[in-house]
Image (cartoon, rainbow, N blue to C red; front, side, top):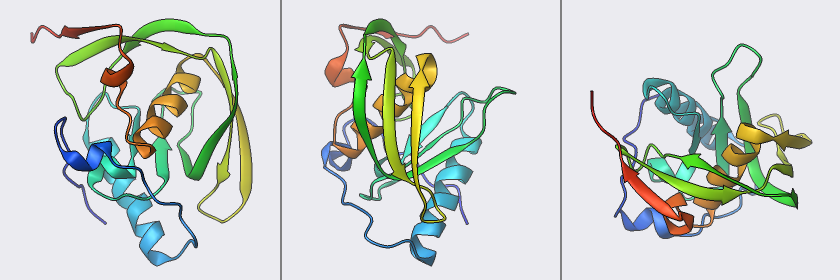
Length: 157
């Protein structure tokens, strides 16, 4: 498919609530391919939500880019349980050059549908839990900056 432009902070589409995917067809599979192509074209990003490429559908992709991780694609993801909380630094491809301190759950249980149409559930800790929260927030028009305690401009080297 194609590498899409990542919408930047200030674009009104990033503040809109995404629609539920009713059926998985070639259009949805194409969006997933575009999300993958776009994520892998952006160094440093570990997740992307469809609204970030201008598509208001409830689809996310996460790849922690570690040897022990695999790419997660979820359609209509929902957090069904949050456990604990901790503060950590967070960034976003839609707001490059900045990071913020955000409080997120230590662990989450997330349900959703795979691109094959199968229901699935993840129990996630640490960075993966934060990534799920961050990307699912995008589907609800919430940006990490909305939740950040403090924001920092990164020094370019």
